[in-house]
Length: 346
Ligand code: COA
Image (cartoon, rainbow, N blue to C red; front, side):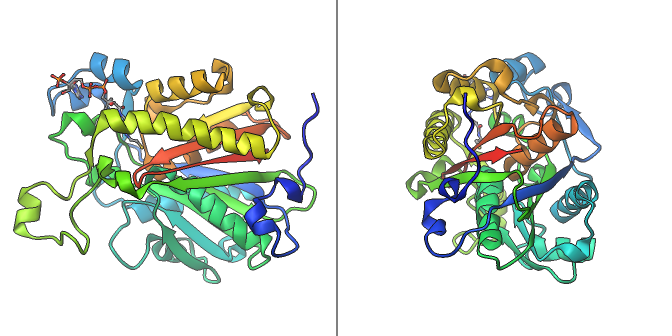
């Protein structure tokens, strides 16, 4: 088996033609989850559900819930600090912070600006990016462009969510699925090192209402009616979302594998969006992946949206599961609809 060496031809061809591309490495990763654990049994006290139903339909056993005075920016800042420590860097080294989130602290300023202040990254530019559960791969791809174009040397990419604030705790269809948390990655150009081989992003705005939060924006501003009608909570068509998730993650996986001329058997670790064990199994089966290739931690955290694959990547790294040179396939899917995939050489 010959593994490809990482060269410009593996880099996104749309970007590579316009400048002498550098490669983009992941210097380090980090994560943070809130202390409070909410088990399925705890949720069964709130709505008509059971641990058995939740585990058999989703694989989730428990999730983390942030404290009242702990916001998305706090979770994001702690994940960022973890990544800085693991990478041997300081906040002064950061040129740009990108936060992927659908649960910003507030409409504006951006959560990225709040994180910049919290960690003291005075030199860094900062902005948020919104691609729901696909946010981390979108942010990786965007961050990569700044590294490759030589605009910035060090980019902090964060996926962070306090989903507990937009979950309808009276809706058993959705409240069992989600959790809070954050994950971060630091992108740099490290010559002749490991890195992001390629990434793809996709979207289908025509299916936006499969998973959305109607209230709080310019279309449905906050009013007494919007609150009474529960429009400031996440709404979802579970079955359709499920089908679209499987299809989108499979085709994104095939696209990046083909771009790198890789077979699924050459991938050591598949890190799929941690939404539902049955979605992960269906994607694994269709891609003909082996069970031990697939990293799963959703039983502990549920679906943490933009943070999901970032937390999983950090856990896989911290546990020693990832060896230098391993190939990692990351797959994401979320509201928008959005989806994406990335291949990383560790
Ligand atoms: N506890 C007990 N019963 C529940 C329940 C819960 N928490 N949630 C739903 N039910 C009920 C439904 O009301 C329905 O009852 P009915 O037949 O009397 O109407 C029944 O269980 C079956 O519902 P169904 O929607 O067919 O279940 P499902 O097998 O599709 O599983 C999901 C539901 C939500 C777990 C599943 O559709 C799913 O995971 N979808 C994708 C969600 C997702 O990942 N979203 C984020 C993407 S980024």
